Length: 326
Image (cartoon, rainbow, N blue to C red; front, side, top):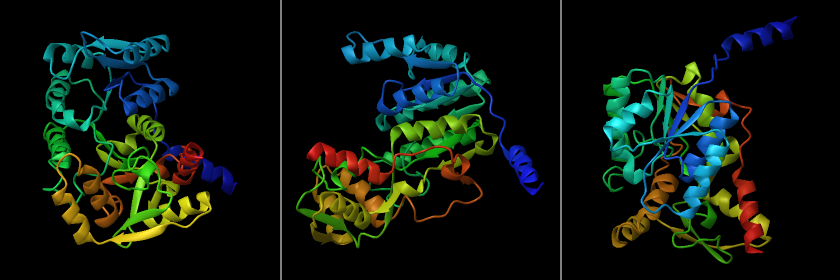
């Protein structure tokens, strides 16, 4: 009887999930493609906003054709065209934006259109990184996070129903080199450790980020909340990264410890944009911007909300790197 009662209680606490018409903006990007696939897999009628391009690349044309064959509805328009944007927004219930960081401020017109249309039940802005309201490197990131924070303030000013997704690093960012600036593959002999190497960062595969995002769009618990993605197998320090790589190689690496002062000097001496990896390393592995804070009442832990989502772990990702370098 106790088991039945517990199961009944769990059912009561589960959110009411309904299929929504989902518009993905930035659908041809790496994350955007995964968002489209995750939306389709969840049974949502899925739409994408497609810009007119005079000479589209063959890969883009093939991708759009594969989307169409999967049942995706393409709507012509752009974030810079009010009329086409309004027409697109009026056709859907949920909007997920996955435009590149360089285009984040283009969401200002989208926010205005969402407010005017009045039909959107959830807006997921283009964030998918560290929390712009928590990072401690403002002023040295060339407005990378300030722009995302500005979009948050616009959303909140217009009182739009929203969810912020903070996944920190994608696994393809810095992880392939064990956070070694300038390298495209993990080191085989010597590694730089920033600080003492014990501060933890978060790395999540884009496919898993997309799955979590689609889970959140119809979940009443995530309305007007920040959802952090910190799967246990995806949170690790640089020391742990190096140790895991050493185990896979069967070999110890020589370690060069870089102090905070030395890293800051390198950041200032390296021209933009070549210093951005150094800035992200400083943010994550020295300042601890991914994990220095707890998850409070205004935010949620996506891993606990959706324990059924099976994430590719950091260790599994490192295994794929070993295969490529052998």
